[in-house]
Amino acid sequence: MTAIAGSERPGLQALDVIRLRTDFPILARTVHGKPLVYLDNAATTQKPRVVLETLASYYTDINANVHRGVHELSGRATDAYEASRERVRAFFGAASTQEIIFTRNATEGVNLVAYSFVKPRLRAGDEILITAMEHHSNIVPWQLACEGTGATLKVAPIDDRGALILDEFERMLTPRTRIAAVTHMSNALGTITPVADIVRLAHANGVPVLIDASQAAYHMPVDVRALDCDFLVATGHKLYGPTGIGVLFGKASHLETMPPFLGGGDMIGSVTFERSTWNALPYKFEAGTPNIAGAIGLHAALDYIEGVGFEAIALHERELLEYGTGVLESIEGVRLIGTAPRKASILSFVMDGIHPHDIGTIVDREGVAIRTGHHCAQPVMERFGIPATARASLAMYNTREELDALGRALRKVREVFV
Ligand SMILES: Cc1ncc(COP(=O)(O)O)c(C=O)c1O
Image (tube, rainbow, N blue to C red; front, side, top):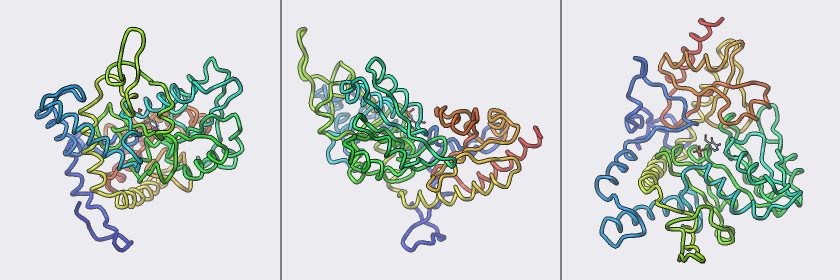
């Protein structure tokens, strides 16, 4: 990636965003006759050309089912699929590819752990600990796991800025806690949680930890061995990769003890009508034909991210977040929701007397794509006493000019309603 001057830290290359944007074909399109300003990255990111080309070339050149054929194409598809697993292992710093399971998305990863690791261990009186800023995908699977067991879900609170109250989290770790499941970064508030401290405190109490890295993983490096987490989930479509592919990391020592999540092809060792045995890790957890193209596309996306570099991405996004905060604060009647001291890339806000849905609809007419609603985090909305927010969320390709366009569009919203 080309660098430009302007970085204040010697040795750190700032992004040439104008050049980088040309890697993302969709960013050149218009919406309602206006240049697209895509600020809905927390929902899904846009895809660089290399990912699109990789998908096309997979289907054009080597499409075949994996792990099953002796023919040339099947071998090549299998090699590419397994090369992606190795890429994911390296990206998240896992010790072995045995610990990397391809899922459909982050949600499936949480469900897999809830069903196969936690539920079989739950007894009446047991607890599962989450935080008040979780996405529904890290709430509902735990409610389902508790059902019929007499176990309960405990929720560590957040403060008025949207930061986790770590002392409370620690206090809520009890001898009955069977898992702590915590987001690394809130999709509704942008808060970055102190995951290293969370794992340390939980482990000191003998509690395993699942980290939801769905948001964090495309903004900052996430290393499962440095964190020493037990499980981690991520989702390909936020990592500039395809939809329908996700990642579950689990420590092999846990995965080995767990029963399969889904049954069917590829996850078996042998099958008779009387009894089946399970395949080795990680295949025990990959039933049926996997998303081969998705995994291969994800490989290209991770290469792309690392080619740009997290240091440069984080620096650029931090500057944008500061600039965007200033833009929003300059508009009368705007109130930011989520102002934790450690936050990244998310500007959630409300406007006096104007429903977020109306904000989203009007700015869309200006070509500006933001998200409005509860962002699959209804308890966060409840915590702040609001039904919904408008949310602008940033990625590596956004610019100050786009945040200015958001500001202009929001001033139009005020003209309409105030
Ligand atoms: C923090 C967080 N967790 C989990 C998810 C679920 O991701 P997916 O729908 O890809 O499973 C999201 C998606 O918005 C998210 O932001």
